[in-house]
Image 1 (cartoon, rainbow, N blue to C red):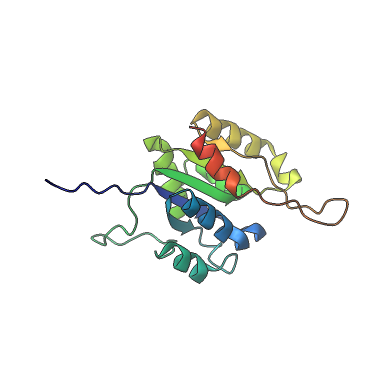
Image 2: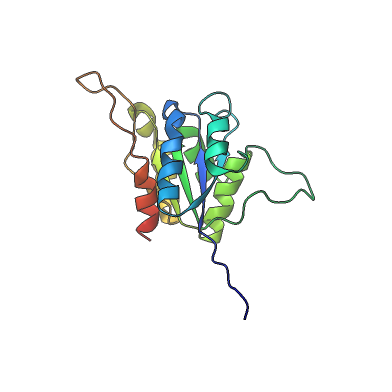
Length: 178
């Protein structure tokens, strides 16, 4: 009798360069608590101090990816069962919707969308940029491709001076909504 192993579903977390990225460990932990294995792919700018890459690697037990692999180099992650883009910036949303794949993060998003992998996006875009016609068109185009968007987060202080919480777990809820 052969023993069949069951692998946990694999979540790609794509991290963009926004201040809230510093708390991406919250999403990693929440995903692991929901029985996901996690791999992190960061935009090149996000790797410049927007989050603690060493902490994320320790939490996932995998390297943080930001650059393309070379020919013949093994894939460090299995194929994704879902993708969470959190935080998603104005730049990433617009380039992705246009099909621009000039970074590993964008190439991964374009490919995942083309394969029909469930994708959840937690935008971190200020009100002025969210009002830009290109951004609105990009969100509409991505929604038409089946991408699920959470409520925009501007990170702007409220009347009491505090910032609203970035709803990290909302990405997992959007994926589970299936």
